[in-house]
Image: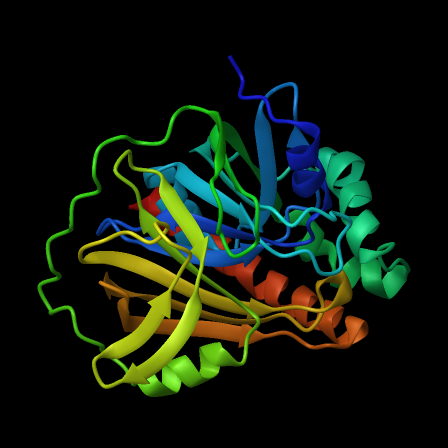
Amino acid sequence: MPVSWPDDVDGVLGGDLTAALAYITPAGGAVVTPVAPVGLRDRDQGTVTFTTSLGFGRKLKRIERDPSVALAYHAREHGFASSEAFVLVQGRCRPVAPPDPDWNQRVLGPAAARFMGPPRRGAFWDRWLREYYADRVPVTVDVERIVVWPALDCSGEPAVHGAARPGAALEPQAAPKKGTGPRLDAAAAAKRLARLPHVLLGWREADGYPSVAAVELGGSAADGIRVSGAPGVLPAGGRRAGLMGHAYKAKAVGLRTRLHTGWLEDGLYAPHTESGFQAPSNKTLLLLANGLLAKHGLRKARRQARAAEAA
């Protein structure tokens, strides 16, 4: 039977401009990255949906390899939800279908316009943004459970809708072969993260689903970044984890992100990799950049597909 959820949770799923997507890495860690689900969900079917680009082939391959994902609805700016709840959705992605122009126009277009405003039209914009709209693919998640904390900092007793949370204790993971310590400047990474209002940590739970929680940054030193969360939320013992900070403005312009993979142990996070980007705060510049990136991304995805077929 599909998982059902109450009206207050539906208001969050339908009203948040952004969410944090977590998916599992081949080594058993988690990557956390922002997405804009623009209210896409089907309460009767027990599904939520987000979109991504064919240009992000690595993310799609990892989701195809392990379809267990989580979406954390954690921020209320520039959306329509008024609840103070932190809503974590865990489930399994359905196979990602090729782009469907009819779905993009009929479903995605109106949903996105509610948050982003009407799309740019005209001879130039239709041509420039053709790949940007054409290579968007929906990723539908069959919801397994929804965990709802009453506060955005994940404090308080959570309510659970759907499957019970794993009862078994989460065992520590084996240390990476290259060691658990930082592989980049932890103090500099912490400084960059501290500039961003939303910081979230993701890891794999005992049942294989990713989990995501809001965290606060403490001090940093050569051995890592101090992170803390609400009582009982963060896992004990050493494990691979993803750390993400982000900020955004109305209509999702001016997006800034810092993404890390690394090692978490007893409140100390050792960053191993770092990536991120800063999008223009001007809507016109953002659309010009999106169009250019989509053209390059789609060409790259097509080249990779042809190479895979020839192999």
